[in-house]
Image (cartoon, rainbow, N blue to C red; front, top):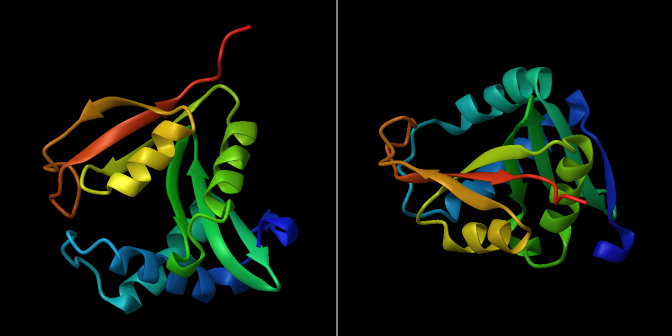
Length: 152
């Protein structure tokens, strides 16, 4: 899939596809409580994420296989369709974050999401804070990761 991967700016008409992808990815995180209905998630993607964040989608063969949403120096979301994991989509999207946020960025990952933690650590991010989850709506322990460019 990566040989025909295209990264582009998300458009309003991508909202439903992004929301479906987001819900499919979240469904694989079985340790998380469900805190929003599907309808709330569709609304959130269309009216908050796409409006207030810099959102890119990765598509191949006309289908969205992943997305990344950034705001200021934070990667708010990076999700890949579960059936397309380990095909370079997440890496391509994370590389876009590094290019668009060359001074560095931060992102949150649930501590139990071991595959995501390995992915980020493998791409040069490091944990700078761990919490008990009391500050997130899922009330699930999470870790704050940071990426900073290497020095000369």
